[in-house]
Image (cartoon, rainbow, N blue to C red; front, side, top):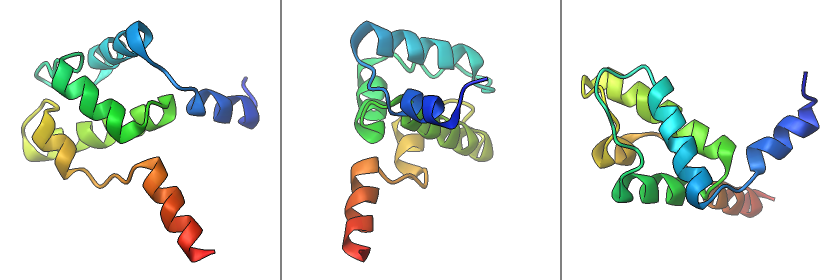
Length: 102
């Protein structure tokens, strides 16, 4: 079993290029949605990367929230509209807000 430190390191690992597309394709196969989202399309993959800032843990968070939203709305797939409607704040924005507090 992985330690907390190993898990944190994995979550913060930056993923790009072909590895990123393979990761999205893997998620696509595992998501509990009735319709294909085509996560590897240029528009969706770029938006997911921008939102998550390319870290595996954040990609997971974005896709989890987007899947929930897609199911709740009946869309049953992730698209740009779904991504825009999820309650998600980019990591850099969370850091900026935290820095303001302290």
